[in-house]
Image (cartoon, rainbow, N blue to C red; front, side, top):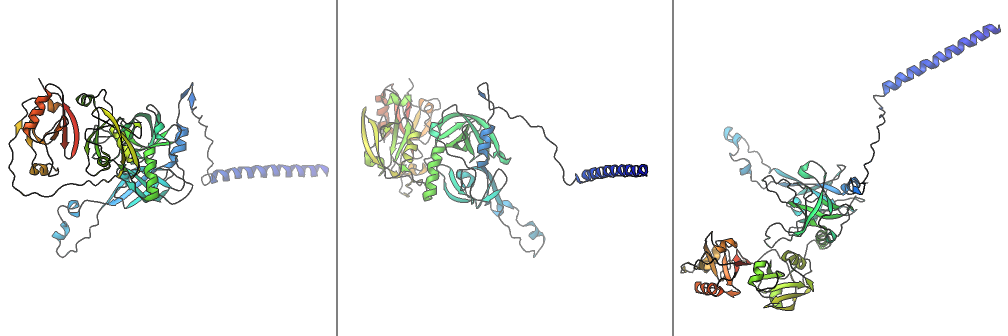
Length: 505
C-alpha cells in the first residue's frame, strides 16, 4: 500500500515537473513572439568620454558645445517675391491664348524663403540675429535644436549695425550670456555655431584673427567694428553665435570675404562684437530704435605720406577732410585739416574706432575733442548731434546756359588734365551746384597722380591746404611745391579725402 502510494506520489511529482517545464517552454515562445511588439534594446558598450585635457593640451570642446548649442537657433523667413508676374511668365497666359473665353488664372506672387541663424540671449525668448536675415520678411520662424518651432515677432531692427532683435513666446529657454568683446585677444580660440547652407546646426572652430575690422569703404550709413575669425563660416551662418571656450557669446556672425562667385568660405569671416550687439539690443528693447551721436566731419587715417605732407613728426591721429555746415563740429570750431588726437582725453589714432566711439555716445552729450592745428594742440567742446542716415543733397536745377571752359594739363608733373568745375559739371557728378575746384578730365596711367589713386571725375578742391578754383592757381601751387610731395584734397562723389602725390622728375 505504501509502495503504491509512493509510486503514485512519484508519478505526480514527475507530472508536476513536466508541466512546469512545458510552461517554461511555452512562456519562452510567448516571450519570443511578443519581442516584435515590445523590443528589448541590447546593451550597448559605453563609449569612453574623450578627456578634455591630455598632457596640458585641450583635446575636445564637447563640453562648450553641449552648453552653448541649444541656444543657437535656425531662423526661417518668408516674404512675397519682388519679381513681377510678367517676369515670372514672360510669354503671358499661354492657355488663355489657345482657348478662347477661358477665365484668367489668378497669379499669386511666389514666396521667397530664406534661412539664417540666431542666438537666444534671455530665458524669456529674446533672440539676436542679423538685420539682413529678416529684412522684408512677413513671417519669421525660430527652430530649436530639438526641431520645436516658434513664430517670432520683430522687436526692432537696425540696418546700420546689421542687427535685429526678435521675440518668441515661452519661458525657461536655453540662452547665452553676452561676454565682454573688448577683452577678446587676437589668437583666442573661438567656436562658430549656426546653420550653414541650411544643412542643420554645425560647429566649427578657429581663432580670433583680428579686431576692429571693416569690410571695404563705408558709405557713411553703416557702423563696423568686426571681430575677424578663421572659424569656417558660410551662407546660413549669418546671425549665428561666435562663442569663447568659456561658453560666452562674444560675437554675432555676419559676413565673409570670398574670392569666388559662389561666396564660399576661405577662412576670413567677420562677427559683430558682443559689446556693440548689447548696446543695439538694449536700445531696441527699450525704445524700439537706436540713437547715435554724430560730430559732422569726414575723416581718414594719417598715413606716412600724409604725415610728411602735413609736416608731422609721426603718422598718428585722424585727419578731418570735411566739416558739415551747421554741424556739431562746425559749431565747436573744428576745421578741415585738423588732426583729431583724442576724445575725452583718450588717444584716438584710427578713423573707424573714432567714428564708432562717437556713434556709441548719446546725442546731446558734450565731448572734449583734442585737435592738432598748425602744429599746436588745442581742445574744443562739441555737443553731439543725432546721426541720420538720410543725407541732404543739393539737386536744384540750373537751366542757365554756361560757357564750358577749356581743359588744360598740369605741366606733366602729376599727369592730370583738369577743368574748372561749373554748376553743370557739378550736377553731372552729383555734387552741389556751388562746388568749387577743378575736375579731373583725364589721368595719365603712367603719371604720379594715377599711382596715388586719383581718378577721372575727382574734383581737386585744395592743394597743400590752399583752395584752388582756377588752372592758374593749380599751376602756381604745383610750381611752389617744387619736388616735394603735393597734398591734394579730393571730392569724389561727395566724399572728400586727402591724398599725397609725389611729382615725377
